[in-house]
Amino acid sequence: AQSVTQPDIHITVSEGASLELRCNYSYGATPYLFWYVQSPGQGLQLLLKYFSGDTLVQGIKGFEAEFKRSQSSFNLRKPSVHWSDAAEYFCAVGDNFNKFYFGSGTKLNVKP
Amino acid sequence: DVKVTQSSRYLVKRTGEKVFLECVQDMDHENMFWYRQDPGLGLRLIYFSYDVKMKEKGDIPEGYSVSREKKERFSLILESASTNQTSMYLCASSFTSASGELFFGEGSRLTVL
Image (cartoon, rainbow over all chains, first blue to last red; front, side):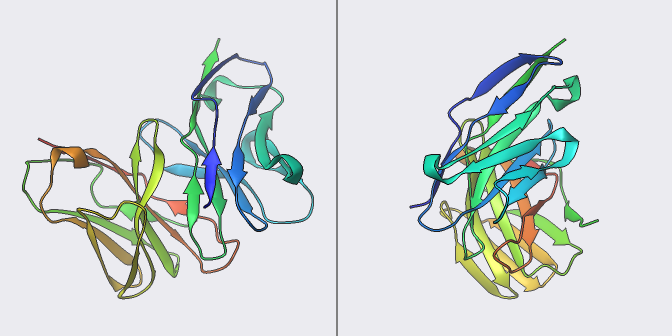
């Protein structure tokens, strides 16, 4: 069965520091992978997505993610975090039947 | 820009009441979804619809039903609300393609007393 694991529930980083949020998935075929961000009280906004090709994908707001098939991972990175990045981040896998499976989310706090 | 609009941002209902959550999208998407979001559990799929009058159960359909009479509108119905249905409900839509990403509404926070 498809599943997505985000092992970190909360992460705190200092403003200006680098960030990496972990995501591991379980899926039998080539996955369609997504990262979404949710600001407090809001819906989810797509940060980036991977379907095929280059395993390093660039997204909005300076985020990037790398697909590693051998590790079943799709970790999200940002070289320098801004206070406005404080939010909850969700990793998701999409299948060929238009269904999506979400991780439980990682809440990011940014220290001034 | 794609817009997914959920009619109510905040609702307070009493146990046993019938609750309607409405969702409208303006991008002619074939697929529409209802998710429930609870802390530590992420998003769990309640129902989805891939065409008008078509629906499929998601992972947690018990206590819920849905209606899709028009392509742009997808309603979630709680026939008899219970306190354990207090949650954030998110509607989403997408095109029917293997790479179709989800577009989300802002959510409806339901409290059942």
